[in-house]
Image (cartoon, rainbow over all chains, first blue to last red):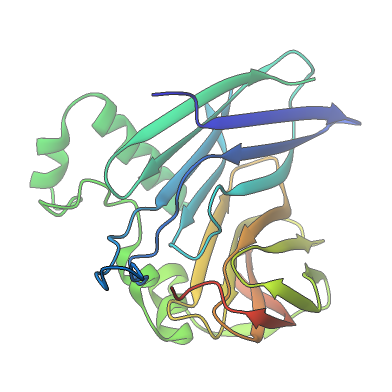
Length: 104
Length: 158
């Protein structure tokens, strides 16, 4: 599977700002196909986990109410430049992806 | 580290070790729901208070001026509404984002690990005009702030 995640992390003054973009349709399951009138099945990211040195710094649980191709940003302290940061997601169909990047 | 967090880490590890069966036997995982960490009850609740009860164990929320919910006054496209919740409270455990008039009000819940600050930013869908509520859990208590967003084109229907 092609990489579906873009992640940028920047350390400044002890606080690391993480920004990530994921590619995902984020179907709520409530939408109907205009042509066929059939309900489009739900397909959305349920869980996003971000780890720094094996410790979870942020874990998000989502409903289908998060926009298509989701964007998140958050901050945490205690990381240094050059550290690895890993972000992964799991959707309601059991698919998952993860990406590791270096903190700049 | 909160108990909730520990439980999640435990679940992750038991999954990673391939001992899903063991976890299921201990009643931690429902048979068809391998992703048991995801709070189904909370995210399927159509009522705001029900969602908060299921998610955070309480719907007793007090408004706080220390939380800022940044969102546009008018969202032309309800499918993409940028939301930022910034809480200047110590010891933030989790931040939930709620679009009160959505079919499923609870949009997202961010569980912050040790070291994480009370800041999250994301983009959500909004079905119609309504309040966006940021619920912050800190020190076992719930605080909230809200901001009304007017939506001209809804982003939930087809």
